[in-house]
Length: 436
Image (cartoon, rainbow, N blue to C red):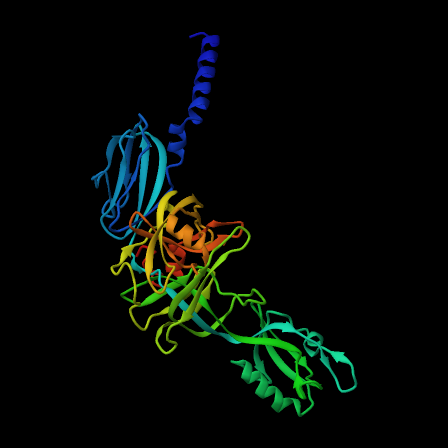
């Protein structure tokens, strides 16, 4: 073969390779995952539809069967590749094109099944913060006519949490008031221990006698509790652990997350709906049915919701048997449904569309974009409204996530969080999401 012919042959081959790299077939080949997570009772299948021969082998064939084989085998990528777990554990699977060219090494992680019962019930939420939160500051008029802000002079900021006063723990607004009245008469500086983000600091503050109220004041607006309405997402009938809301509870003034000291969830009755409009989210109006009938406690308030343990099996559920959860990588764009309440305590199914899925390797609150398509729900609420947060999202019979936020300028749409992150925070799955 002459030099010119070789050059032309090399050029044509290069052009063919470049052209092939832009084809859907090549993109399917390169997009084959490097890691596959699969629950023990599930099956995962990949369809590449490529006329290429491949040899498949596993270093732990007892963990997962591939196309029914436990040993190395040859197949065409025109055929689907199906992974069927045999037991919990990890396996490394190698694919070689034409039995020679290493194409892909895939880590397969077989996980213990996780099944929970979806909620959808509207719940009342009451919680007490760990310490007393500073939500505002003000100036005080003294006996000589001056105005002064002791809190500002001491360097206290909105969002700080008051933990101790002269070494004594503060658990409520009443504690602050009582201790202040006892200590202020000594006319000495008071030491406050504060929590500011992840830092603990101590400051000295000098109470001032307020001529209007005839009492000593620090110049602080403070709060120790919060209450509201949300939706139960799921619970585990084996451990009675639950997850709800799908997003963190923040103080309404400071917008800082509330650190929970104690809390409870209650039955709640939806009395009316304020329909959502562009620029103005709607809202469920609800009342606590019986504050003495506590469904469960609240032990955690995280970016993915509130969590705790139930005292009783929740009433009014639409699904009363556990269903499987879906991993984030298994959630697809397309039809789904949510469970929620729009009247009294009746949980109903409503159609939605998952319009966008953001694949996440690490926890983040906005995993999917959802759009309400159900005519009944649109007519009643305008779409997603406040109080609907935590409503479970179900796709193909699996619990895939929870409603979290509404788009202010489009109430028919909003965000959903993947259920895996809530399952982890509920501490149902710390061992079950990892292969043993």
